[in-house]
Amino acid sequence: MLDFKLLKESKQTCGSENTRARLGQIKTDHGTIQTPIFMPVGTLGSVKAVTKEDLDHCGAQIILGNNYHLYLRPGPEVIEHMGGLHEFSGWKKPMLTDSGGFQFFSLAKLAKFTDEGVNFQSHIDGSRHFFSPEKAVEMQMILGSDIMMSLDWCMGHPATEKQTMEALVKTTNWAKKGYDFWQKKGGKNNLFGIVQGGMFKHLRTLSAQQITQIDFPGFAIGGLSVGEPTQMMYEMADHTLPLLPEDKPRYIMGVGTPENLVELVGMGCDMFDCVMPSRNARNGQLFTSKGTMNIYNAKFKMDKAPLDEECQCYTCQNYSRAYLRHLYKSRELLAYRLNTIHNLYYYLDLMAQMRHAIKEDKFLEFKKDFLSKRSK
Image 1: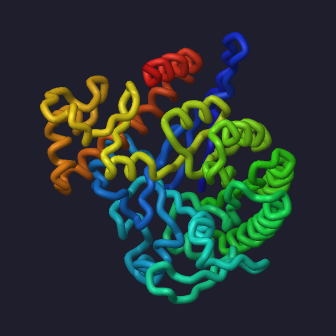
Image 2: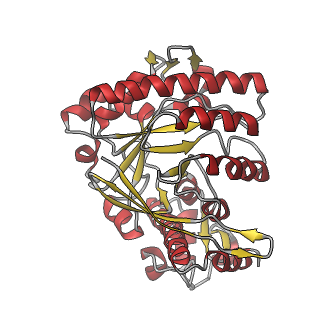
Image 3: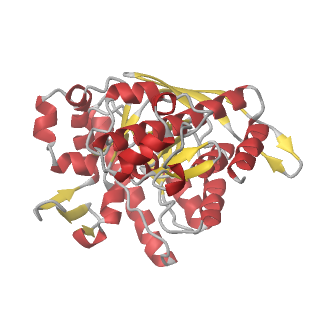
């Protein structure tokens, strides 16, 4: 079972700025996770374009799989026969699985929300299916993930207060049903509750009050980075994070850019996931200590330099910008692997740097230096 220890909380203040950045440790059956941490997204049990050895090299401590997609293919019967997702994929470290709630939001035309759960149509073959909060947990127990997520109703932006309240009520009811089912089954997995409430602070407060009354091992904030302005996202996160228990992990789902991660760690968040590093890598956009780089730009055609001279990843240590541009422009498959290795390493090293800064009581100095480099 999950064991969370809060090792340190930064209390730095510099002028009008302060920080609530936290250093923590999560112990699971598949290993220990140092927080704050970023989780690479492996939707179908695979982080696109890279191997588990690549993930180890990049410093990945935990990866994320998706309940909805794995339910549709290869299906629970295959994964159960193979001994769970860890055995099936070969990834032996901790794993988190999302319930599928975000997919029902993003594929809204194929899903219908009811008090009992979600009726949905497969985006693959059009077949009809139903997820109750209990079934969402049962499927994740078959997957064998270390951390499971409750079924929730994610509301996009903009949304009315009435729509947001309806989603909040269902999310709370589903959380209670999923928790009761999890307790009844007595699984080893750890179930996290999700706070919703859209872009309404009073609804975020209400949702946090309701969800934290349930004794989940950890808590997440959902419904951010769904079309709202960045400043609004920060306001909602800054308002909601202090409402979550200090002695349990805090997870903001589906966020985000390197700047987002630095800002939100400063507000006291412990866990993140986002497809951005791997998806952007496949589109030729690479993250560096000095900002983002579009490797397909003509100016890199004769460039002998590595992507980032400060980076110790396999790609930067072995290949030039010119070669990486050539691979990408030629649509060589190697481009996707090398670009993804770099972006994942960048994200995970950024988290390691933040952990070190918190430990040394220098988070605000780190943040100032980080932002100044990327603004040049």
